Image 1 (cartoon, rainbow, N blue to C red):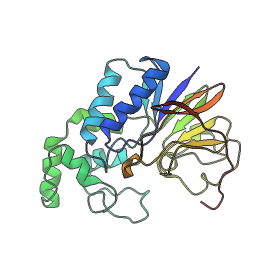
Image 2 (image 1 turned 90 degrees about the vertical axis):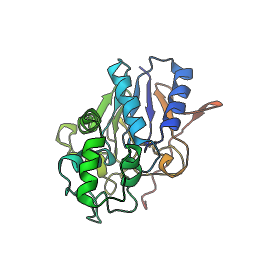
Image 3 (image 1 turned 30 degrees about the vertical axis):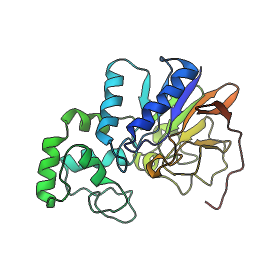
Length: 246
């Protein structure tokens, strides 16, 4: 069974639709597509991305959408305005962190981000549809397909899938990126932005940096190997050695 996967979206609705079109041309409109998460933040249309994917799911599209670390920020802010994600090494609030992209997400919902914190929260609660917050907070943490295990950030090597914790699945880098272990299934992930989708043998990183103006990666994984989907067609992604210094 063929699996398609799309990297970190970060509010880039136009890029997401383009990636879907590349997949539809390759595998038809009923293709099974896994999205590795980070739907929101940084890009211009987080609201549009959430609406598009949630409506697609409701319409019965075979789309699987993982929960990324960024997908935790908005629903938690709405329900617990002082919450700080324990995965952040800076211990800064989503609203205050200059690189997380909260302003772009809230602006996509029509929220004035110059408001004081208490008014900002009240306005966000009013502006963000409850269904959007529920969609983000209910996204699964992993998806096991016959061809791969899809997660947002990665896994803790040597830990059974059922025993993996959410903080690792959405935040992990150290301990996973440098691992050369055979994890069993190919791990398809994003979270760590690189220049282009790269196959490392035991894992496949498909966060090509759409949040930073680079393309949104779409790949196909099947018995014959892994291919990046481009406007010109398929581009084989061959396994390469893991850089243990990253």
